[in-house]
Length: 131
Picture: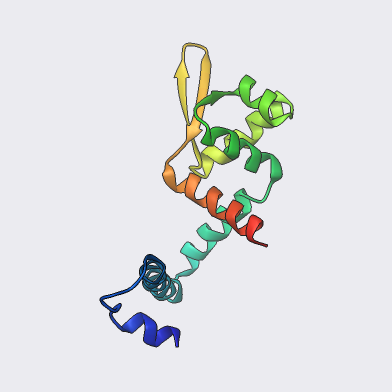
């Protein structure tokens, strides 16, 4: 049924939910095609991406940075872990291109690298809240 829905053009008179479902199914089909051709190197990169999000402190840092740019002291207060722990997690997040740093004098400010990181985080929140 899903395959026939994907291949068919959406009817002319449809509601917004049907349009969104059709768009989702086309995106899903496109993703399935890409995943079937996933080479080992890309699979390792995706595994590392998920592993990076596998720590509650890093997730809380990402949640804080969604609000905007912050320095280590602000993140320490917001997340509630030590400054050295925040710095450690930020180094990992920087290596994985989840966050980017900007120096202003002696202070370093961090922000999310791009909107994809916020989207990944939001999808994770939606998934948890859905359950």
